Length: 186
Image (cartoon, rainbow, N blue to C red; front, side, top):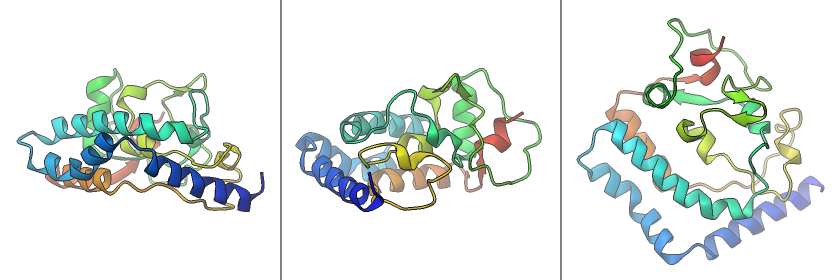
């Protein structure tokens, strides 16, 4: 499909997912960040609550995207992680961060160190950037790292998720971000 047609398809999918979102989920999304910010939980527990809510929210969004298990083009993109996400990955997997992080580099096109046999080996512990990245085009053609920068397409922005995550990062002093390959790469 041509880029213009894909852009229209993405816009139409955004419109559909917004208008067809269950009212109860839309209400929860509208209140989510303020409730999480007020919750008397430590940042790690807040991150888990955010991830749990995102699982619920994205189960609705995934109806409008070609993203599926085994589609792993985005696993070759930059994967930003903060200190709290690094700790979350360590707590939920057997992997430990490198003692010395690799220097910053351009990682676009390089597979994520957790990509094994075409699937994410830390799917339940994956960072926020992976959880929220979906394409709303009709196919995954434009996700290929070789063409992913050629065109840009409408994407969904969920401000409650962004606000909640920024709160978690600030309260956990996780302001620095790294690429996952710097932290867990060989």
